[in-house]
Length: 358
Image (cartoon, rainbow, N blue to C red):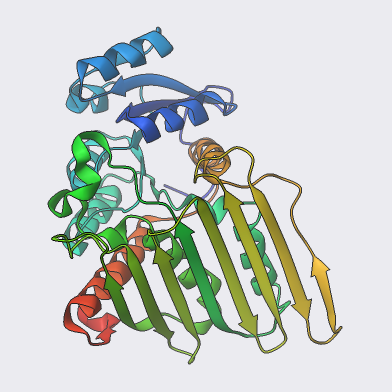
């Protein structure tokens, strides 16, 4: 598609979403679509009859089916929003792309690089948009950190820390999130967001070159479900990032710190849970040249529920006006590659060069 080309008939027609997956997070996606100007839920595919009944009740004008293949073939769908367990991402995304639909794909993009490559290839072959759900890039606060770095506020970035302390994961439908065969690895579940942020924040430092990671589990008999995880990621310039998470804690507390040759940034977010509507958050920055600390906390509330709405608006603007995506298939592929490298490092106890993964 040519840059700026309109992807629907007119800018006044709604972008019609087909939602595949109607669990807890799928319901959040549906709510975000409904709350977005210029977007409408036109179809829903859900696994269980109960979920189908719920979708029909909430969206009486939408087509509802238990078979996503019926959904992706419909002519009244512009975008397929994929919110199913990770091991199904390749199957559903490629079916949608080959049916001529644009795709918004929840993270992780897939659980293997082979799957990621196949999805990217399908998007290119069918000339369709492919966006991966790294919604933190749209946050009024986490994006502000990136903007300050790009503006040179802290000089050349040298170090980045992204940290999360939270209560354990939700199990997901049928307990899929605690089944390593269906989830791939737990680093792909949430630390993938933080690998993505670190790579995004340190873009000026070049590509990641290696990952060294450690992890352990509080769950006897399940060492593959790693509740405590930390990784060091090296970059071409000599900059490095630390990504660390514990699921052996309480509530949901995230922080990002970035230091450069001319200053530093500190951002934090806290809530009773990840989807809270009333979080506490703060962004403070230090500029060495001015020798002053500024509070640049954004007025716009931040949190994954709000970023999800921003993600839908981004998709609408991309489809209607050809505006850029916040996270492309290539971004999604890099994030999966970093997580796979981290898991390999955990398993071997050795640093893993990214060239071996990519």
